[in-house]
Image (cartoon, rainbow, N blue to C red; front, side, top):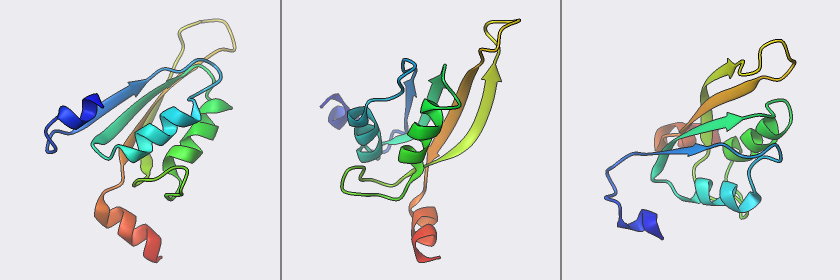
Length: 108
């Protein structure tokens, strides 16, 4: 609702920092469907499970459940916020595929 008031030519960066359970399906659907969001910064405290699962849904081809051009991972950075433990945060950046990239990926 709020997003529709923004000018179309303004690139939008969304930042998500979900709990260990990862993103809710409705959030992934909204991120995928709103093509004004050109970059997504995902901060994960569970990089080997929910980040992997969510990245798959964010980067997969469009479906009825997850419409819109997919994202692609462009950068990742582990962050050791808890030294001397096994726990590590992961910050991952996803960029929206351009129309050309998307068309090329669907014809190959």
